Image (cartoon, rainbow, N blue to C red; front, side, top):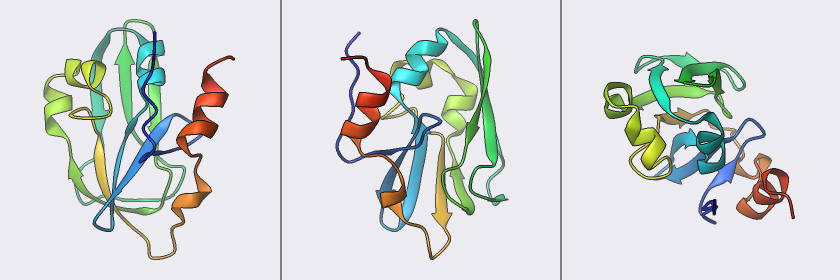
Length: 129
């Protein structure tokens, strides 16, 4: 399979991606990680308004193969949760970078997007040459 690694995304070691939009951070899971999970049957996410610390889990993704936790790459407040993905996990499977985003976070003031991997660094980590 050929995965997309858009240059406008940053990636965490735990396969979450981050997209900055107007000072907020849209967070989801990479195409690679979603493909590794297989058929997704259930998604559970934290509530809007939750204040989370960097590295804290913000939900779980359950597939026919495994249950995986998803982790927040930055400390911040959850300002939006993608209820469509909770109601229809296939959205996450079919379009993880587009309609399959999970949370929008208002980050703490001192966050540094450059702490995460760029698309080339992430691709070289997950796709063997």
